[in-house]
Amino acid sequence: MSLILCFSLSAHSQVNLVADPSFEIFSSCPNSDLQIELSSGWDTLRNGGGYLPSLYTKCCTLPFGCTIPYNSNGFQYPRTDSSYAACGMFQNTLFIRREYIQNKLKQKLVAGKTYCLKYYVNLTNSSTYAIDQLGAYFDDGTVSCPWAGVCSVIPQIVTPPGIFYADTLNWTQISGTYTANGTEQYLTLGNFKSNALTDTIGFNAHASRIIAEYDIDDVSLISTDVIAWAHNDTTICAGDSLMLGRMPEIGLDCIWTDTVGHVLGNKANLWVKPTVSQKYIVRMDNCLTTYDTVTIAVKPRISKLIVSSNKNPVCSDSTVQLSASVTGGGSGGLTWQWIPSFGLSAPNSPMTNALVQQNQTYVLTLNSNATYCPPNSLSDSVRIKAEDCPPIIYITIPNIFTPNGDGVNDTWQPLFNNSSAITSYRCTIFDRWGIKLFDTDKPLQSWDGRDQTGIACIDGVYYYVMHATGSDNKSYDRNGFFQLIR
Image 1 (cartoon, rainbow, N blue to C red):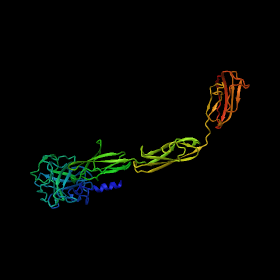
Image 2 (cartoon, helix red, strand yellow):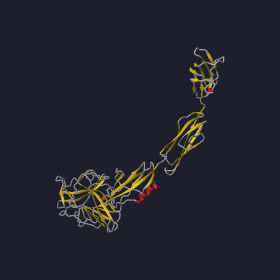
Image 3 (cartoon, rainbow, N blue to C red):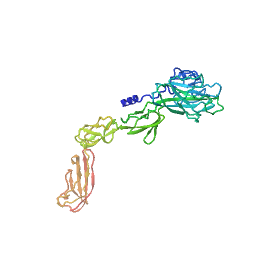
Image 4 (cartoon, rainbow, N blue to C red):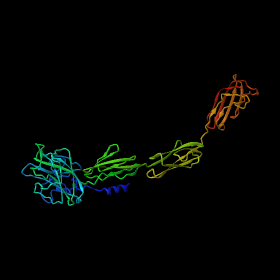
């Protein structure tokens, strides 16, 4: 799986061309709110002009000047991470004080290729006005304008007229597309219209400054041929995780869902650890909306085999049940082999009965096929101890017999399942008047229905008294009545 992951990361490397898109990399921490140049890749116009944009960050050393969330412009948290910029785009005074922020892109744009620009703005608390038609200009870095004045160029991306950005609480996305001519490597953001041509709305008459200044964060420029990508369909082992999609970047706005619409994540990547085969869907908005899906098949993984018995030790020549439990196994794709197999009822099954005649170790080997991950072989064993146990003695007492010479039920005697286990025995039979008719000390000797003189007894009820002791040292005394019928 590590090879798959490495491939996906190299094949889908960084795509945002804006250097330091969320103003997080500094040459040093600012000690003033007018030091945008300390953010890597950002500055005011390199070829001259503009005023002094601001940088607000967590590491600012000037309390309430360039700090967050409280600073010289009021109160605002970054959209992401710990920093953002601010740019003055309108000032209703004789001193225009127009500001621009410029970024040297990571590489030149490719001629004929279309790019999606996105960034987020928030009107500062100190602003009296809000404006429309915020602009973005692409060139080779030669754009210039008067100091603190307006750049007389036409931006390639401009927000629609009549839509005023007046939200001081939430970050508002601005986006647009641009098809390059191949010379551009600089992006400049700001208001490229003169004060006279800038449409404004009064927003906060009690604001501290008669300006329209905007916080800016999370700037991205990504080719529109970068579309949604989830992952190649693949198979993983149960318990493994996998990163889907691309490495997260500013500008890669994605929504991940399952097949029933549950939202699973909102970044370019999604770490998953499915327990069963699962399909994932990613939606990406890069000035146009695209979708991709990936199916992750999950193979079960057998992690443990445990063999046990229903009793141990057991009596010699008795039966014990052997069984196996598997962690992670399914119902198919498994083969079983018990060794030794002699005396087993099912030597190729996870459950079998074993006739135990002596101390014995039973080994079960489990083999899994390609249905499992990885296919492997596991073994476990159990040792069954055989003991010499006293025999179990059962007695059956007939309640009737028919000594009529037909060869069926002609005699009466107590019946033992194991007469050899009887160590002492005495059985005496009496008639209803208490006269002794029969007496024996032999467990296998039966009464034929005659008295001690050999005369046949008449039909009727007779009484017996039996005293018996087994090799288990238990007493098996019985007494009661039975019937003689001729």
